[in-house]
Image 1 (cartoon, rainbow, N blue to C red):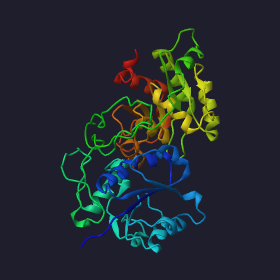
Image 2: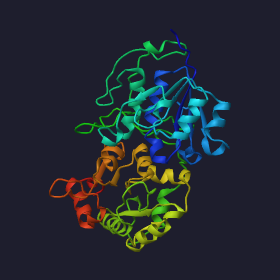
Image 3: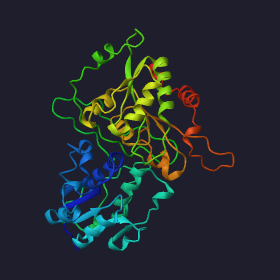
Image 4: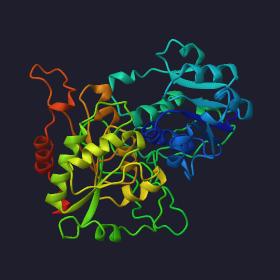
Length: 392
């Protein structure tokens, strides 16, 4: 039996980092259904991340519709819908709208309203969030896209109207580099990052390079911010705040670490943050006299060229670290150890990263107390791993 497939939606209405880690799923859906129209249902504050992506044809912002998804489905009714982050109200609206294929977690009380249930317990954190998202498509098609490690099967994409039973899952690198806007040259053609050791983050996903404004003169920025009389070789960003979904290393210690990095590697520290993070940014600035505090001075669209040109980004587990990974900027991330909070599940999806976590307890139980990470411990970790040796 042939089932026409002309429209497919992915629903992701939470934070920026979550959205970035959902892009591999959206891309792989487009690769598998190249003739279908791919739409995204999202929150409007993630638009700066998803704009100009060639594998998303339509975007519907949930917060711009009075009755949210209920009204969206009156305007646009997909044949297939994916729910990487299950929410009762969103799945209920898809159910009552009569969307034919509703795909999401098998382990919610309202999963009865889904007709394809994905049997992944994400809290176990056996895989990275980006991998869990792509596994939804694998489960739906009963095919394996093998993010770990990537495979190179042949096969053509699926045209609208093909039988679901015969759909091949296309095996490309899951995320392509974005085509830059006209007049902006891409720096790299490689779309597969170096593989990680061990299970997870196996080289199958590469996050997109996001469009940025090339007209900012960063050389002038360095000239105008001479703190020691010696021109810095570049700058790095540290972001002491977070969206509140993770356990954070303190702003004062991050500021102290940034000062040590600035002095050791002759780099200008730049503090980033939103208006709600101004207090933390101020604390960090008090402990990093070399820093240029740009907290609440830039929108995400303005911040992206800084991240792209930065030598390094330091952050807790929050959206900006995933933006940096997508822009191929080296990252240092501070993460707790409990699996569903850890870097294994939520870390930046890049090989050019250093993760710093508390030492676990002597009895082997997880330690998530970020206050047990001292400044010296973090700085010695950077030195021992030679992570920033490239700037010596």
